[in-house]
Image (cartoon, rainbow, N blue to C red):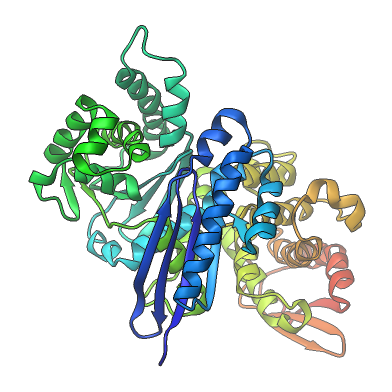
Length: 511
C-alpha cells in the first residue's frame, strides 16, 4: 500500500522545526527530511510577555520556506503546533492569525499536558518503554524552554506527572539578568533548579526508588556531543554524566559551539539543562540516563499515527491518562468502591444511548474521569464538595488532556451538585468548554451518582433499554434501594431535558 507523506511542524520556544516522513500502515514512519531554524520566541515571551514583530516576521518567513519544502515532497497532510512561547504570549491570538494570513498554516496552540503527552508517545514509539518495563520506577524528564515535565512510571504505567517552572530558556534568561557579581552563574542556576526538584521529591516521590531517568528532547542529544570519546549511544551512566557536566560548566557556550559543532543558541542552554539533570541525579538513586533520541516533531508524528490508527506499538494511551487520574484520586483519598461503581454505571448508560448523545471515545474518557474525581473535594471540605472538586480538577494537570477537555470535566463535576443554568448564564463559569457536551456528561453523571447514594454499591451490572422515548434502567439487586430510587426520581430531570426521553429505574427482584 502506498504511504502518506506527512509533515510535523513545531513552532517551539527557541526553534522552528519540521520533519517530513512517509507513513505506511505496516512499516510506520520513515523520515524523509528535517529542517530547523533557531528563533528565540521564548526569550520574547518569558522576558517581555509578548512576541515582538521582528521575531514574528522571521517565523512567518521560515514557515513560508517550510511550505515550499512540503511541495517538494508532495506532502498530503500536516500538523503544526505551538507550545509555551506562543501559549503564554499576550498576543497569542494575533500571532496565530498572522501566521494564517501570511503562510496559510493552521497552527494549533497546545496545552502543556498535550505537548508532553505527545513526547511520551514518541518515546513509546521507540520501543524503549518495553525495555525499562522490568524496572519498578522510572522518571521521564522532558526539559522544555519554559518548564520541566517529570513523569513517574511504574514499569509501563504512568502513575505521576508534574510540571515545574524551570525550563532551560526561562532559567538562562531569568538568572542572567542578575549577572554574577557575587556568585558564579552555575551556583545560582543550581540553587534555582535544585530547590524545585527537592520540593518535587519531598511531595511526590516519597520513598520511590528511581531506577532510570529517561531524557527526551534535543538538549540531551547536544549534551552527548561534548563527550565524543565516551562513545555514548542510548544510555549515560552517572560517571559519564559527571564528565559531561564538568565539561559544560568549565567551557563557555561560544567555545562549546565551536568545538563540538553545536549552534550557539543551543550551547547557551546546555548549562541549565545539565544542571537540571544533575540535580535530579543528586536527588534520586538513578544509575543511568536513557536517551531515546526523540524530539517534539517525533511526538507530533506519533500522535498523528495513533489517531489515524497506524501506530505500530501495542499501547492504549487512554490507560496512561486513567492511571494518572487514579493517582490524583488516591491523593485526595476518594472512596474507591463508590467512584468505581459510579464510573461503571456512567459508562453503561453512556454506551446504551450512543444514538442520543452522538459523543465519541474521547467524551467517554472524559465521563470516566469525571466519575473518578466527582467528589475528590471531600478531602478538603465535606460541605462544598462539587465546588471544591471543580477547583481541584481545574488546578490539576492531567497529562494528555487539553485545557478545554479538563474544563469540560471540571464543569461536569461542578454541575453534578449544582443546577445547570442556560448557556448564556453559565458562560462565565464554563469558559472555553462546550456547553452541550458539559450538559450531556453531567446528565449521565448525576444518574450514575445517585445509583450509589448509599455508598454501598447495591446497584451493579445495569441492563438498559430504550423504547418509545423511555429509557429503562434495570437492576436485579436483592438489596433495599429505597434511597437510591427516591433520589433517582429527583435527579433525572436534567437527563430528560437534555436527551428528550423519560428515564425510569426498575428493580426486577426486590427483597
